Amino acid sequence: MSAPFSARRRRPLLALIACLPLLIGASEPRLVPDVSNTQIDIAYSFTGAELLLFGAILYPGGRAPAPDTDVAVVIKGPAEPLLVREKAKVAGIWINHASERFRSVPSFYAVATSRPLDRLVSPRTAAIYEIGIDNLLLSPANGASASEQARFESGLIDLKRSTGLYAEHVGGVSVREGVLYRALVPIPARVPVGQYTAETYLIRNGHVVAVATREISIGKSGFERFVAQAAQDYPALYGLAAILASLLMGFGAALAFGRVRR
Amino acid sequence: MHLYLPIAGLSVNALVIVVLGGAVGMLSGMFGVGGGFLTTPLLIFYGVPPAVAVASSATQITGASVSGVLAHSRRNGVDFRLGGVLVAGGAIGSLVGGFIFRLLQKSGQIDTIIGLLYVGLLGWIGITMAIEAARALMAMRAGTPPPPLTTRRHRKWIAALPFRWRFYGAGLYISPLAPLLLGFITGLLTVLMGVGGGFILVPAMLYVFGVSARVVVGTSLFQGLFVTATTTLVHSLTTHAVDLVLAGLLLIGSVIGAQIGSAMVQRVRPERARMMLALIVMAVAIRMAIGLTWRPDAIYTVQLL
Image 1 (cartoon, chains in turn purple, blue):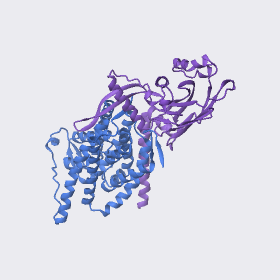
Image 2: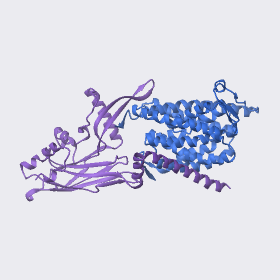
Image 3: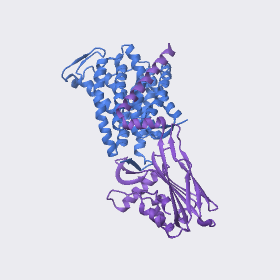
């Protein structure tokens, strides 16, 4: 019974908790999720994308669908260690003053829910499943005091929110007749590349009754991918190519305009 | 028309970048300056990360100086010996600069240092130029000949340096150590600020070394071409911040703008043109100073570890 949910590799304990209700009674519904695209390519004209997450809720034994079913969809980018710097006014100018390390910060986080978070799940459940931006576990690494950590954490979250990399879409999921759900999540142009996960939570009476995960990969494609990779992997060749391209363009322009003037 | 910049990692309006390159190119065509001192701050205001702005603007200057170097060398306007010494100094300067850039990036102070360098240098140059242009304009109005620029042919400390070389084009007999040091400073500034260094080199060659005016601009362009090329390489190796697409867009704009600018310069009095340039330079310095002293929008910034 728990086979479809073994995809949650990283947190086996949570997966077990998630599946617990299913082991107890086979009467809980099941999720059949899908996404509009499992691969998002960043090409030259990329200005962002929209990810459509949809699926069906299956009720075992042909039971009538429950109308009070809620769905939350969480899209998470690869986690990365970050250094957050805080500016302060020193001698009249604003300079980076203090800093704090965070061990694992999702590079992207978007949550769409069918109703406001505080009326969806209990704070404890929200914390367990990391539903909602304020429930993210960012793992601060410096030995700073709790209040200082909180200050940096809120600074980091505000920054991520303002660049569109962290977002909450309340009401972004619509559930039809307790059977079909769909969520439209915008992906901004500045989205970092990497392997993303889209987790769908089925929620009844404040409890998570089913979880399903899909993987989405976001990557640069074509020329953009080639340029970005070359700059990282072959910096010397890339630099020489950049110089050559620049010289050729300059020389071409000199030739072109030289002829025009004569 | 939106275009994704692969290194900067953001989508920009390609037309804005081309127009920006064009406007800067126009100024460089009119005044014979590289224009890097305008490109870098304008890109930063537009939202391009400072490291990418600095590195890519250096790449753009390489291409933009090609036609100038060719034109000047055809007219014997380049002292290749002096240029070679300046380039050698510039290469060392850009290597050292790349190391400093990395260090400042790690400690998180690079943006502040770039800002301070811009405010200091542009403020100083803008004010000096404005005073000089104002005096020339006033003299013009009074009908008297413009006041002569005080140039001493020989500075004591330069004359005291050992082993002298003869630089025929420049009409100099000085130790190569002095231009080597000058090249070193401009190389350093090229890496840190994304400028060609012409605005340091030209006055230094004219007023400190007393280089013959015929070869000053050509030699400065020659040095700028090689040092910005070295800088591109240094940035590619250390900061990985050279954005080919961004540099290309700027270059398209600037070569077209330079043609318009050099056509326009014939219709403007040189004193007026210098005054205009001085005002633009001061405006950029003031804008950078405001950026440093006003409370920034983002108190918090992040850096990948």
